[in-house]
Every structure is written in structure tokens, then in C-alpha cells.
Image (tube, rainbow, N blue to C red):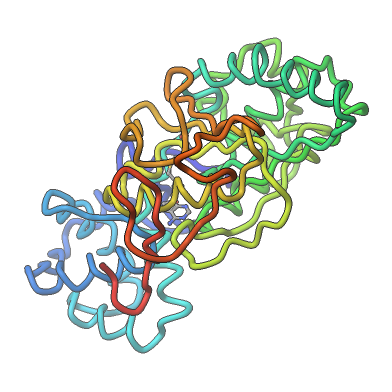
Length: 341
Ligand SMILES: C[S@@+](CC[C@H](N)C(=O)[O-])C[C@H]1O[C@@H](n2cnc3c(N)ncnc32)[C@H](O)[C@@H]1O
């Protein structure tokens, strides 16, 4: 089933198939979340995802885990913590899926798609004409249920009038959450979910689903073929990315990170981007001036210096290094899954 709104309003979380919405399970008293259990769970969340849950997120965490605790036949958060320790691999993935916030939409923060069609793509086409470099690599680094990478694909296809043959475009779409990735790969959305897609684009790039997708709008080829989904954890020590990237969308994910994790991640994007590559962030995720190699070039749009224009103080093309961050620079603080902060 395509993602639908569920009990956790605004989070993008969906009820797992066959589950009962939380509101209707109320007769059973919810297990209490003690300060100690909350601290232990917060630490696990931070180490596994980089997401920093402040004191205010306690209720949210409790609400999201109660269903899982009941499904496992457990009666307390302490028992759940023990279960997590004993079944680390499998349960950690479920735990992560439960705690991420996946809210997204087609063409969210529309100015980025205007930038893509009106500025970035013409620049890339000019580059192709000038240098013969036809490959365009875009990374949607926290893609949730796929609306963002498909919006990128539709924007490019529209701008190119469906004719992509003179360019080799690929969109890598990744997330840590395996549930949303499965929904994204399916590419089938309910009426409410496609409400932000302009009617003309809906007609051109979606088909009405059949069989298990009946009643849903399914993203059509060639838009689907442009997007490749894969699980990537932004705080994992290594990202499985080899080719240089031209443009990174990392929107509304870093907002859940602390400042050092946020800046470290942004610096790692820099190391995977070509000179002159762009980074697009969410509406409340601005970068501190001088803290990363990016310069601000538009509304939540950042760019690395183009080749030959590196600032002398940074010593040319940015390289990631391990160690303390130099003042106003971009050191790498490895996220240590063993020790957390
Ligand atoms: C609010 S959604 C944003 C979706 C989309 N980028 C947008 O702006 O509409 C945030 C996404 O970040 C993902 N996320 C959180 N921590 C992550 C991590 N450490 N690695 C990769 N993805 C992560 C979540 O699973 C979630 O799907």
C-alpha cells in the first residue's frame, strides 16, 4: 500500500499493514517511559542515525514505540531495550524506521525545482557542450517515500521535453528508513499524495495503478528509470558512492542533527561533489558562514567553488580529513557508532 497518513500527524509515519491505529488500542494502558529508558533510547537513536532527540521528543518516541512493544508481547520499555540489545541487527532497523520523521511531498519547496530547470540544467547543458561531459549525477540523500527524487526526474524531463538522450542523467535516491524506501521504489501514490503535482504533469507522467496498485497514481517510465533507490545512512563511516556528484538534495533531514553532525555531513557532501557542485538544503537548514566549503548562492542553495576558483586558504579542492575542525573550516569528526557523541 502507498503511504497514507496515520496516527502520527505530520511525521509521514504510516501504520504497518494490518496494524490497528494507535487511537483505537487505547483500552490497554501504554507502558510508561522512564527518564532512564528515554536516555538509553535517545543514545541508540543518536548512534544509529545522528538524530538528536531533545527532551521535548519523549512523548513522540513513546507513542511510536508502544505499538512495537505490544506487537512483541513485551510490557515495558526496559524489556524493549533488552530486546534491542539481543536482536540488534534486525530490531535496530525496525526501531530506526519507527523513529524517523518522513514527512515529504511532491515539489516541496518549489523554488528548488525552478532553480533546477531554469539555472542548473542550462548550466549543465552548457558544460556538456563545452567539455563533452554528458553525465549528470544527482543525489537525493534523504528521499523518504520518493516524492523528492521523482519531482527531480519530472522537472528534468519536462525541461528537456522528455528527450534525455544527449545527457546521461541518473538520480540516486537514498534514505536510512527501509519502509519508506520500499514505498519509494514502488512509486505508487494516493490522490492526496499527488495533490501538489500540477494536473498536466499528473496526466503526462503517472498512470492509474492496477491490481495491488488499483486506485493509485504510479510514476511512469522514463521518470522511474532515472531514479535508483538504495539505503544509505548519512552517519555511516562510508557511503557507497564512487562517481562524482553534481547536485545533492539533502532537505529536511539535517534539521534533526546536532550542529557538529550537520556540518560534518555537509563537509562529506563536499568531498563527493564536483568542483562547482550544488547542495540544496531544507527551508530551516542554513549553514554557518565559513563553517563548510560551501558558499550561499540562493535561497537554501549552496555551491562549491567552481574549478580554478578555490579560495587560497582552503588549499584547492576540498579533501575530507580526520581530526578536530579547524576554526571556521571543515574538519571531519567521525561519528563513532561505538561511543556516540
Ligand atoms: C522529513 S524527511 C525529508 C524528505 C525529503 N527530503 C523532503 O524534504 O521532503 C527526512 C528523512 O531523512 C531520513 N533520515 C534521517 N536520518 C537519516 C540518516 N542518518 N541517514 C539517511 N536518512 C536519514 C528519514 O528517514 C526521513 O525519511
